Figure 1 (tube, rainbow, N blue to C red):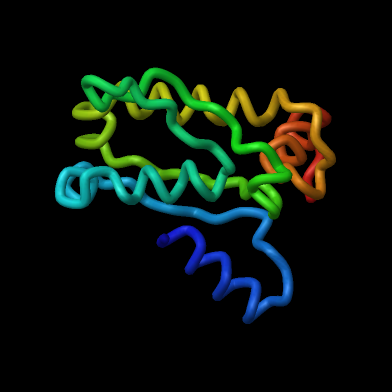
Figure 2: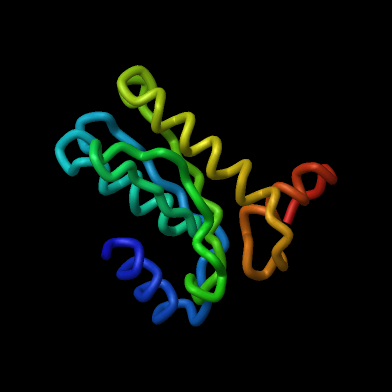
Length: 127
């Protein structure tokens, strides 16, 4: 899995998990890879899709429990291209939903970097 490989390499090189990662979501890459880049970003955040079995469509997202995830939730900043925004508004909405969901969880900040960043932002503080 791409997300696991990225985290394993970072952990090996830095001795800790990254608090944040930046990525660019391009429409053509998303089409070519069937959404691998989006899936990787959601996985890094500790989110998984809940699929509708007959159609294969995403019904909703849910947080992966920390006991199952066994690592912190990474704060992923996604820069999206205009073409991505125009072609995949449903995915943009799901990403926004995921961030809001994770920022609202009652988890320790050292295990949920998304909530940590949201809390700092609300307080007007910087790291």
